[in-house]
Length: 185
Image (cartoon, rainbow, N blue to C red; front, side, top):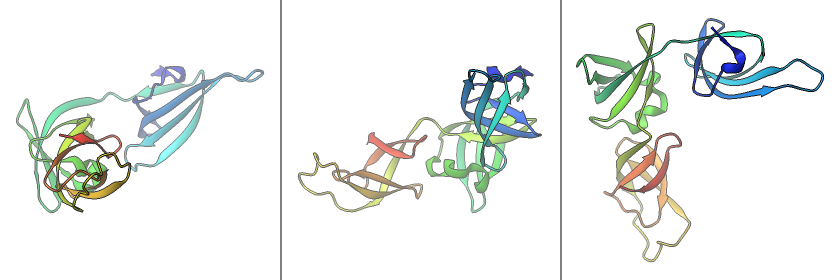
């Protein structure tokens, strides 16, 4: 158990029998009132965002997590398969469980799978991923200075806005936290 004032963004806590990932934490001490900690957190099971106000004296249970480095192998129509790079053990996870992470999964991609009580609870892709463009409009000559973008379909099926000078077949680097184009790869 930790004091509510020790909660930090990125931490996973157990609250009301559920696991929550902390996004923001603000410690406030209004003039004539007791101090409190305002926390914005996401329920790891349902994905819903919640805000809660803890008293400064409140105790919160910090969840003990295990992280395993894994490699994405392939998917069938229902499951995505990962292999632990140390033990070579294979794990299958449903597409609904992975959420937006499926947009970045290409063969042999290293990911971090977080476990709680022996069950996987999240899959984190690397900060950037290089993906090939499979479909986009033809580039326009002299558009390298233009600030206008166009839509491009990537090899994983994800749609992203790219600059006009990017062409079909090129590899681009994608920021996985925001799902946006960064640069040519």
